[in-house]
Image (cartoon, one colour):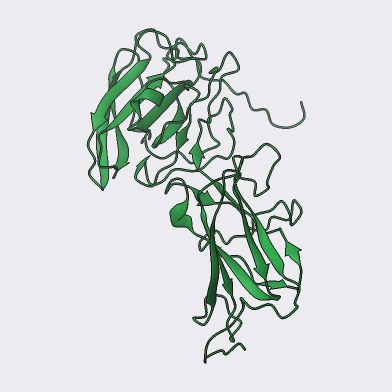
Length: 332
């Protein structure tokens, strides 16, 4: 005899119904495309909860019942078994991600199948409602996570870094007002694929051979640690930042929890190239081991940002004569 008190569900009792299951995987979406690619690895130790919908049939409506909790295994897999048919939803707990900087990837991308997409809401970690039939095995409920990354956007046609520099994005450390995330590097000689805004190079900043120029840099540091700001300028336009005198800034700045405007002073070499634009690279990070050079180490710096700019050395008319235009009227 089975006696259920008011509010009891008795789902542990099987009266001949076929039991079903729900699963599947939490994975690291390294290219941030919302698709579980064949070479992307699972993420372990993420807490996953299974809820059954309450009478109001609303996710998070207050009458839902927590049915079971799982933790993903070494392959990132989880499985809820012995389930009666009914209406459920799954919660992936963002507080159990490997690091607080991980974010949930794009939900329900249309560029793949339901078995290979990410099903969790990017803010809450909740799936949509799941109607599980008696005896059904539904292994389609996945979630991808990623670490937002910042890459440079300048690359010379003459040469480029063997290892590209990169920074894992943190909301506690950046240049300017924000930092844009790059799923993959977008490089070019115009250095214009990112919304870089940390260095103010307006018309009042005049780069002239032999002179000293001062320009403001905006730093936000809420890490609780000292951060390092480094800059390089390719004075001879040979496509790298490795020649003598091309590192123009190497200073530390405290954590203030607010925007900090600092001024960088640069002496313009007497032989700086005047006939073409010069690349300027800035790196900000608390991770000295992986941000001390203009190129990469094979490992992204754990925080901060990288920004690229183009500057122009003022060119006298005897070297860069103005273009003469002759305008004719009528037919040639």
